[in-house]
Length: 172
Image 1: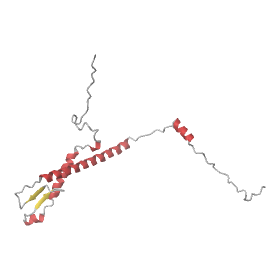
Image 2: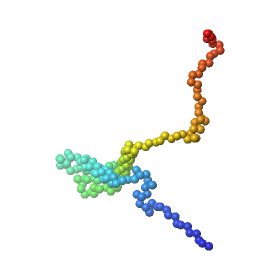
Image 3: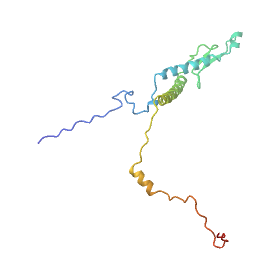
Image 4: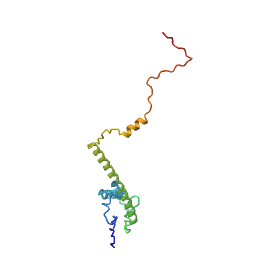
């Protein structure tokens, strides 16, 4: 008696393939692009610049060094205290939380840019290649349906019904 051999089933797994090849899990506009790192860097540099723009220049020019520069939104992750220079200025938990917030913000900006570019491409594609539809003839089913459910036509000029008690016009 021969033994029947069944072939082993091959299943795709996420761990076996690169996520970029498995794009059917996520819609294409929701996949981050190479712009994400540039947007994240721009947000981080903008936060640093805003922190350094808050330096009290009048205190610096007058020679007063009892001020601190606090950098970071919503949490302060860099705290430069010039009067107390022995403390470490970097706060790691605040930096990680702010970095996570900046990453989510950069991802949202990247998705919005992807959606705007996709809409612009669709509009230009429609302008260059308009779709032309041909007039379709009615099928037999449509013709039969029209005849069966056709409303009766009302007379165009109905004759007025005269009341029998009203006076009759004279016959000439």
